[in-house]
Amino acid sequence: MPRAGLTADRVTLAGAELADEVGLDHVTMAAVARRLGVKDASLYAHVRSLEDLRGRIALLAADEKTIRIAEATAGRAGKDALVAFADAWRRYAHDHPGRYAATQIPMQIDPELLARASGPRRAVELTYSMLRAYALDEPDLTDAVRLMRSVLHGFVSLEAAGGFAHARPAEESWVRGLDALHTLLEHWPAPREGDPA
Amino acid sequence: MPRAGLTADRVTLAGAELADEVGLDHVTMAAVARRLGVKDASLYAHVRSLEDLRGRIALLAADEKTIRIAEATAGRAGKDALVAFADAWRRYAHDHPGRYAATQIPMQIDPELLARASGPRRAVELTYSMLRAYALDEPDLTDAVRLMRSVLHGFVSLEAAGGFAHARPAEESWVRGLDALHTLLEHWPAPREGDPA
DNA sequence: AAATATTTCCTAATGGCCCTAGGTTAATCC
DNA sequence: GGATTAACCTAGGGCCATTAGGAAATATTT
Figure 1 (cartoon, chains in turn green, yellow, cyan, blue):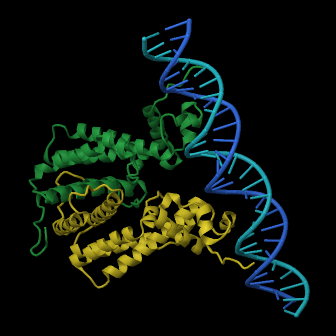
Figure 2 (cartoon, helix red, strand yellow):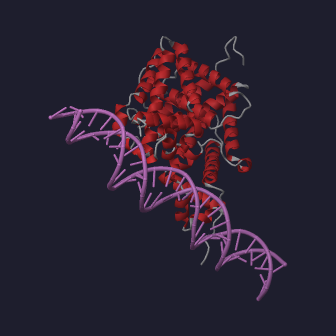
């Protein structure tokens, strides 16, 4: 009987595809094994546990999202870069809802695996380089990066959870929200007197 | 043998407490039943399924969060109200991480139950009333409300997932981010020429 | 107060899932 | 080709969700 040719990456990919199709919390060892034409016990040669698998899906998603953002922002600057960055983020979440959901799981990921992963780190670095165009000094830059990430992640999450009633298309609020963010970054307020930095 | 005196609300509360203690996805029928000193099968007289229970926890959380925000913002206006609103939101997420996580599950909630719940609707209404102080006209007001909710939810989620490296305390980015949001709301940019509203 | 109806909670059972242990067989390396 | 490594399997234990149907406590009616 020939072998299926499994590997940790192939198991992860199957899990990721399944997550996009049926939702992250319907990704089970049994279902992934079925998709690969294999018995569930066979997966444990490549993946430590279901939690481990979910962590790997999260890291895969981080890598893919980072690549998309890098490609989208390459050669752009200023507001162009901002919009390209944000659109790439949102589009990834739309195209891969299950993978994206995996990125939200609190960091119960195998530390060794996490250390070898470049996706999350590079995503933050990309945000920094994009925002550097706005001439913010630390610690404002860090605060702006965090605000930016909060907006993108929050909008996309609420959208996915059906949080925006259908009155006004989410797309339009998105465009206008990015306009507003751009304006804000150009006029980032100075710390108020009396507040510690 | 005396009875436990269960009801849908008591089961939901036990589930919510458990969610805060051990995380939402460790909330199982069996665990809730143990906590209530009851057999798991007994819960099905009050709750349709595990999914139903999670939906009820989400609605409970929405109600509680709304009440906290309402109390915090009562009698305040302008930036005071904004900060009180945001802090109440974030504090609820910190105090009740499991309940808060439940609010993120896509709306697979029993529609009939949802219709009777006032929490989610009132939370949005409160956001509208708070932002009305900034003299925005529709559709800008709706876009601002959505941006606001995105920031709050996104920040709190990233924080809970350990998304902010410890370099700079999240608290400080939070305060400065709210400063920035306030400024933005005071100077909300007009739609750019050529763009459809 | 007695009889009835209702509801709560139980026991029993099915099937699915995660995961471990230990055996076979296919690929790989000399 | 023979030995080693690894992939994949069978078997099984334990936990969980859910249903069906029975017994006992409460509520309702007379």
